Length: 514
Image (cartoon, rainbow, N blue to C red):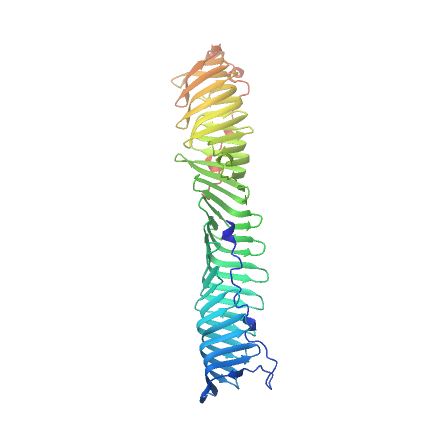
């Protein structure tokens, strides 16, 4: 992406010799004005015309160190003024050549106007236009009606071009286009400025920068050709960076070419076409050398999974991009929450491994699927074809669901594995230290008793999010307690905690920007 930002010097050091176009002459007239002197001409034709001497054939004039060549000319000696025609050419030493079809030059005001097929050449570039003016008094030069600048590597075109020698600034306006064939980029803008002292190029108005690495779209921005630092502003719609793999939008985009570090601020939005992921936030950072991106402040990820949308929010979201798929990650740190129509959850931190499509939940994770509340010391969830395939609960595993009579069915164990079909749990394997409480209902309206079983390993099968069968694999120790014998402490397994109030809701997610 750094190639997009590097506009070089834009070859806009045009007219660098303009301030020397007509150098001061030591010999002055009686009024102290620099005189334009005739060096030679083949003939003086037709005597005087409009109080001017008419010269033709290999005409040469001189003022100071500057020479003027043309086919014919009108020389207004008293006015110190020249009109030159045909193969007009001005040279200043051996570094500058200005040519055109017609020239008017006022030796007193130091104003020159060249028209026709105008070409300005120096050691670094060529400028072609139809109309070029230069004012030595104000040290300003400009062209109108379109101009083209070429240095062999870069071509710049615009309808208007302006240069101030006093402030060392260049301005190009209307349909500005810069094409660099070496670095393979094209810039299209309404206005482009360059300061040869600060070495900063500035563009204003809708601007597009295209290269083989991507496209930048912005309303305004600047690039420091010395430090390699650039910034892009996008009021309203935001500045935008498009590559083959992602689209980045923000109100402010900063990039340090030498350090290969990018900063984005306000209304940040990153979209990955390949992964169908959108990441948003208030501020973000990008380290190109490591492929790491961070987003802070109302950080939100949106991912379309099987026609449904998964929302993930946290204090910080980190994307690690790498050509090695085993190293590609998405990380969420602190106050992490997720929401999907059939799955909600919260934890301190989360990691998504793109290589095996597994999501890891850390530090007090709790997930909800339909009526089921799922907790463990850590949880990892495996996806297949973007659908939940299996959930592994590691240490202090606990699943709770509430029935129609507000009773809590509970299963706990050392480790558990929950299997999913169409995003619903259909089987749970309990591995080690298994315990369960299940309330028996008649027609979902009448409690007939409570089953409590202790068994190291068990298999629970569910249908329509309700327990259908429980298989006890090793020496179960169980009992059935009728309703009239149920005491409140006996209805809860050790470690039970109902966390309904913590369950994330859709309206809690900052999704209004999507």
